[in-house]
Length: 230
Image (cartoon, rainbow, N blue to C red; front, side):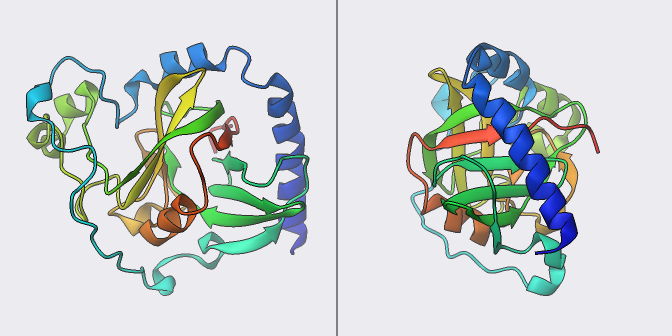
């Protein structure tokens, strides 16, 4: 592992220990308040709930792997050293470095490159995986409907499938029993990996989110580190 990776892992360890020490204190209320603007929420009043498509597609579409040449080497899935006290299974999201870590053994994690929320749409805190969905539907928030013609087209929800912006899989994050409206999900735009351009959620390549999806269970702890806006 490079010196840069060593420094980054050490920084994550310090930040994650700080967050772990807070252990969900007040995170549910803060998460719910800050995440209301994120896309993927379904608690709005502007759509017709009777017209919502199924929560998951009835078709299990094949996942087409992305040509590795389209993804920068540092954002390709790999196993790395990971120092810290987190139990195997824990998910860490480091938005500034555009990485998601899944701890697979003491001192070891699978690292995935991700896309993150642009400035003003970030979220951080402690959560758990509350729901898992394959080829999930997407319901755009009112703020996106007001400014985006494609979102307006799907005001009552877009069915899950290859053209859906949530991609092949989604992990729905909850804090204190409340949906944060924050998601870890796939994408229909592989070029977004490594960039800050989403409306708040964490994007992964479809093959990567499917890999993670099969390894995590409901109740898996998730720690999203604060962003410094870089």
